[in-house]
Image 1 (cartoon, rainbow, N blue to C red):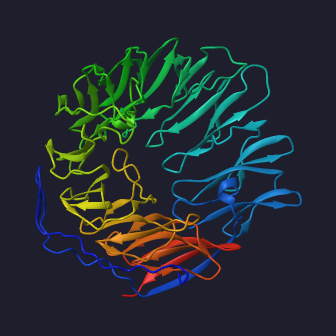
Image 2: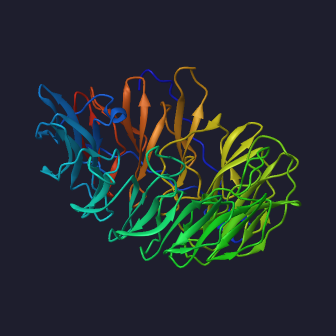
Image 3: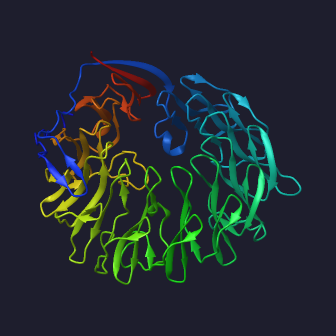
Length: 554
């Protein structure tokens, strides 16, 4: 990174004991020592050709475990798939490819003559006139596979093929989804799927199909949602001018509008938002809650009914349920049916007046932020307002052990991360990076704790050239060197090592505990994956792809 400006400024977050209302307590009197860069042993394994820019064209994919690459390559007689350097059979064309969740199987669409078929691990399936685009899916257990096939024939032309067995034939099929245990398959048929219509299919001919059975006819429908234990399913549909949610084949009450259904983690509860006229309520287990002007965070200046199903939050233990709402008195959070304090917010564009509640991992705490009438934002933890006021707050994040709370806050001096009530260094802005977070937590904005809850990592944006954006990682208040955009944060299971992917002027590379891992003429195309506390791996590519395995010195 010699072409980059170097900024390595030691800054330790104040971590003296700070009590946060609601029982969260920072017990450390000094910040922990950040993970240190180890000596590395790096090995390379050639995985074969990799098409430059292939991900956009879907000519190349890598496996979920980041150990294999498959690429569709041209040949004189058509195309073929190369898997880890091994050339597959040639076909006239190659369609969408996908790996199984366990990375042990590869499936793709192929064409020979005027016929299309699916090839799984080199074995060709039955031929059809067409294979549904992007319909090919594996079950979560990787043992089952399904897709849609079309045959020009008298009657309905489409069917779903599950493990090689054809289902019933329909005018149109789509939105295939397996249950979490892979034992059940659902899909939508007919005229409209999410408002998409087919000119040759009559109105009202759609069906929800679950376990191979036509369950409910509709005019339009969303996708089927299975409960975590796979025992239940639900789907929002529209019939005529009414919307309703069907659960396990039983119709719910019709409304003007309904959101997608949401199941609790223990699968015992199901909820959705319903709207009639200009009022909304939450329907939980078939029972209507109180009617409000709006349910969900919303955006001021946008008058709508209903809301987003992502704003309905069950606690991890399924014992609590929360959402935000609005009535004539203001905005507030409803938790377990009890309304919290109501806040009056000016009708203006800007931050959402209230952020969707976030439960702690142990389900004992709930937090949200409020944008108040005086244009200040503050945190409300377990119903208690925090004293600090900011112009905006983002990424409310609990530590894995639920004892710590962090979030981004916008101050007159810039953005900072507040940890256990203490403000960190001010930055130009927060930055996005590929931290995967559960639905309803921090919305993908980069801030994370290590598994042991002792270290905190975030990514900050730095003012730079107009063409190239500068970012940096900050670990326990210590700034890493500047780089370009950052993605793919991963943390070792013992919390002792931190890695992410960074963009430099000469390509993409990994940063491991602050140390650049850049190999000549190669760029990182995946994040690093930790196999153990002392080993990790990922994929880089140049003209060919390489599996890069890294081992730390003892």
